[in-house]
Length: 102
View 1: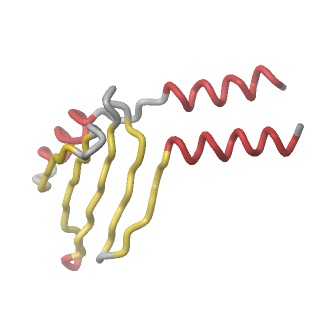
View 2 (view 1 turned 180 degrees about the vertical axis):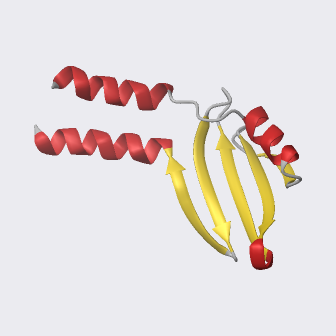
């Protein structure tokens, strides 16, 4: 049981997600708008804008750390943003779960 918990945490720590280049290539294939910004902490924010049926605008924001690993992902549909993934928040939740079980 303990090894399974350690493996889950380790897998999340080393998880790198879809690379910034893969996301850009996919966006280009779909003729989506792409913007890359350097954030103050040195990480990169990739924004992909697309329009779907009924002229609905979707904005996907990906945050990559200095090593190029995906740390956060957000989606915005019609101006309403929602977090899809936060690597560090998920790590904290898993650690807290394990502490509550112990």
